[in-house]
Length: 190
Image (cartoon, rainbow, N blue to C red; front, top):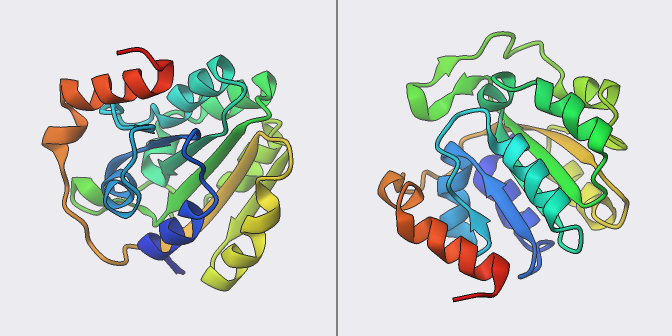
């Protein structure tokens, strides 16, 4: 199992300033502390929407890489998005699911099928170009350098444990300020 914060730290080295990151829940809270940046899309208050928002951003911004940092419980609520992404086939979309088998920020309740579901196989069947399942930091470090040189959509299921806990800044992620900062950075308009 990979400590989530350690995975994010490693991944952060491959994300350029112009790239978009769509993250949800605890992964978002960790990411905001590890790599604060204006192109972190944080207006994803509804569980299950990260992949759909990421798809829209990838299609609208083909010149940018779009990274989706999804939760396993969140993705379960919108599995149909995998088929939509597979059919749309955005070459700039990199979809990571941080799988720990729980609804972590909602009381750590177990998710249905959390011990047996294989998201990467579902993504592959839905048409993602490359899919991976990674359960060690060493394997993640070996995968990352080549991962972003290939055309997506790409899906990576990361088997994670919480790692260091970061503040849960709900007030910021639901604020007009967060949305406005992102809008300005994305459009380049004041």
